[in-house]
Image 1: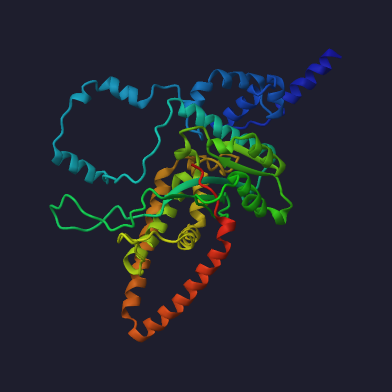
Image 2: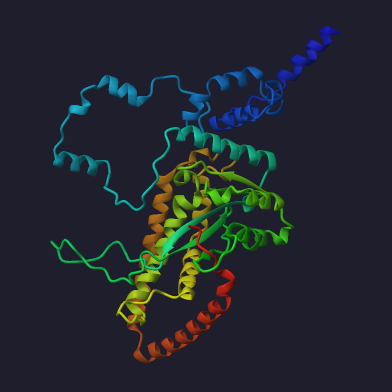
Length: 420
């Protein structure tokens, strides 16, 4: 009888399939074990041997520093350390500017202008982002969310005055004055949210006018209405570590809406939040273009002291809507994959994680195409006859008046207090 039991046990072990686990999947299994499960139950759940699990636990530090798509750890010395050991005098080498220019030209290297001020990453950011991505993978394997139910929400601050950072002036001029409304310190907040399949949720503008519980208001009026036709299905939402996202009231409200939360560790939104990676910058660039067009073409009102009045709430709301509508849905999908949130669970898309270069090139192509399109539209307008232009201006005035009336009637419903 003991002999028969031994045979059955061996047969069960042999029947396990030979699966090549990536570093991200191994960390996800380790996290499941560390949440209070035994090694035997963990091994049975993921169809692995306990010996494998023990080996992964012992190599957890190496797994955290490995690429997420790596299936086998490299035991050799890192290339950087071995290079420094072989060439200890490299730090004393001197190069001329001509040699540096030639080297950069041969290897197609260029100097890039700073576009954002990024947070300083924490010292243990590799371990934190590894644990976060492993938790994402674990939740997706447990609940099998469709991409249309995986979302990201972020609050981005904006100002009523959005002058361009670039201008044209004669060579040698050290100080250049840029016309503005003088409201650089008058800020408002825009709440943006999108889904992993490219769906864009309606933006919410928060002005400093009304005192409302902002987060619960957003849950009821934006997040819940998104799924009203599907009877509030189980969803997954990625948020940053802003204190308003972690209150008991907000957590309870999300729990009632069947929404599982993943809070990004502090200081890692520049790597793990899709809206921060690329979408916020493209959105603000579009709004800034609309502001610059308004400053250069529109007839502006002035205060009693002679300063330009800031744009109205209704005009700002139209800029926000137009800027958000202009975001390409394919860039939203790619941003989620670049942050490791919506990648295929079988590991076939893990190479897209943190591929910021490809995402950066896509953003640059989109911005360049938009500039060319706007230049073409401006040239067409200049070639039109004067009479047609007058008729068009009268029609646009009528439309703008109707649009302003619409926003003025609905402004009280959408204007709530600033997050700050």
